Length: 118
Picture 1 (cartoon, one colour):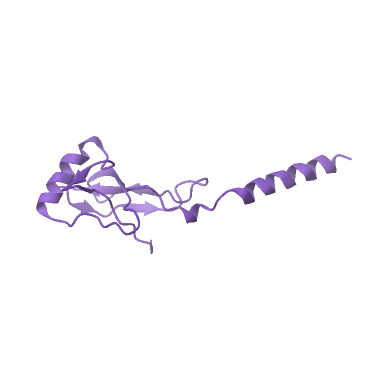
Picture 2 (tube, one colour):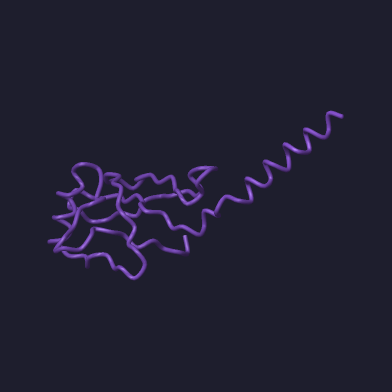
């Protein structure tokens, strides 16, 4: 008699798990960068997944130096600003608060393209 409520509970949990959208369908909205003092990018060392719940999130460290900064991911079809000394200087100034989210350069978001092959 006790197995019937247990089976019903398992069926309910399995149905709820199947109803959740897959995390691979939605790209992340932000990522981590490592910036040198000049504002140039140093590649971070990232491990995936950062979370058992949201596997789109990476755990990134700036083991080669630099300051860890959050940056927005470019929308589909959007390109990040071209790298230049002027852009690096503007990025360094914008990153003083630890984030590039909401910051722009020449009217363009300071976004980052994700490498799909990581």
